[in-house]
Length: 91
Length: 311
Image 1 (cartoon, rainbow over the protein chains, first blue to last red):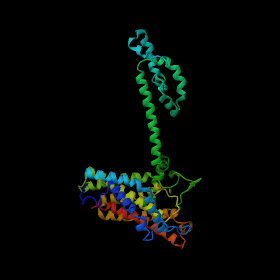
Image 2 (image 1 turned 45 degrees about the vertical axis):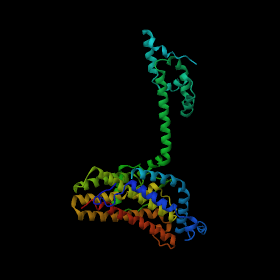
Image 3 (image 1 turned 60 degrees about the vertical axis):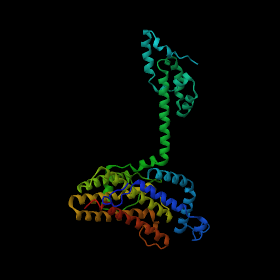
Image 4 (image 1 turned 90 degrees about the vertical axis):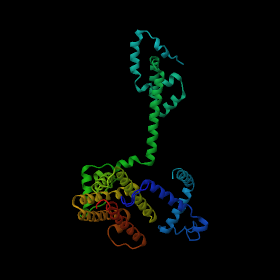
């Protein structure tokens, strides 16, 4: 997997993209609702803003975090288990 | 249940062999699909018939089975089973593939012709004279790219990507750094950057809540248009040296910047702002910043992906 750094500035492969995606989704999934997000004002109850036409960037971001955590909770268990096994076996 | 007369076949008299050739020929028709199942009366034949709508073979099979039962009922049944399995498999593949990659929608993006490709390439390199950037519609569906220069297509980005990989291999070859694996490395690297760019644009479009009819494939097409400029720059650099590369790249960067701004302005901004009037409000400002940053990211990528090719 090591490529000479002289050849390509950033030799990305699809595999590294998948790795980065898994790491990012894991990072979003570990944000705890009670202990962390509410403390910094990003909780679920604080996202019910005005019912106008513009939710705003922050509300959209909070909704995104909440939906990623809800949707990806179970698949992440499987994906992480597979990753751990593969990394243990093949390095 | 009819008795299988096929087991008499090795013991047939010579006069019967000529008669047997004919039914053998007739068995090559696709109608014998249900004959095997009728011989053994299994229900999978009925299920296959329901799925495939082979009812028309039913009455014919009844008529033919009287002469059919000869050489190799096993191969008949195997043929029937195999053909029905293959058609079922193809149906399933078509249905599932259509769920992930919308094939019918993709066909729209490849409906191009030579005139369109020529005009679009000219637009990508020299967009300053073009005046009407709106996509024309026909009863709520966008017109195919063949009839409208402004419609996005996927032919030019796909061809541009492949040509970019080949030109990159050529450029690396002139520097004596070529090896066949490098083609794959270049291709996957460019693809990864493309995917990341499309994902970033999608994310920012979601965050700013732009109500637009831009689909993901449209964004993919717009992000793929920069390969044309990259190819022009690298070829100029190969032919005439480094200053020519910088000049050509500068020209193409400016061209793609103007192209993207003029195309995205109509899709992302509201009506008033798209006509050039100054509109207040944070939302419009955010949209304007978004358009500018998408357009400005193109020259950055163009330089990033090509500077190591021309030394």
